[in-house]
Length: 159
Image 1 (cartoon, rainbow, N blue to C red):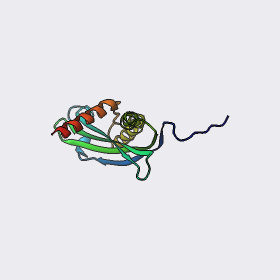
Image 2 (cartoon, one colour):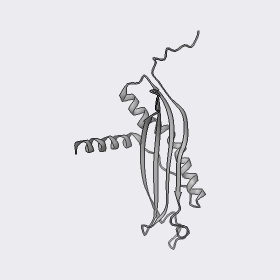
Image 3 (cartoon, helix red, strand yellow):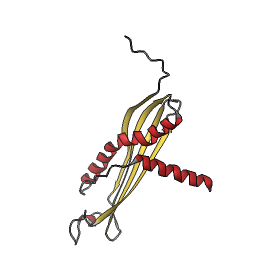
Image 4 (spheres, rainbow, N blue to C red):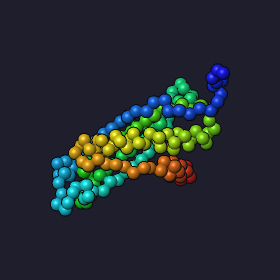
């Protein structure tokens, strides 16, 4: 039996994934490595921002680049910045013959969910290599991120 396809079947696959950008600003060094009340890690808080963007590949109606962007600002108890790390992790995905609603969910929720463990590892390694305890980000609910973004866009459209 031959495995032939006509190209009309729905298809979704991650073709490639890669680190698109990474920056680490160790703004608080060397003072951020010392603390008067115990470990510096216990004396800090992290502000985390997440975004997902997808862009069709030019001259190709079946492939999209999906970027998961993260920014972590770590602050000391006195609100001074210890470090800032920004990263963009991307995937090129094949999405063929999919209903619009399915395509939206696959690009904005499922692709970031599948690639997030790699981005999480990069952030962890970057903070460790910068001299801090490895920052292990909690799992992210990309459905909630997507819904918040849709709501923001709807509110902006109403204004």
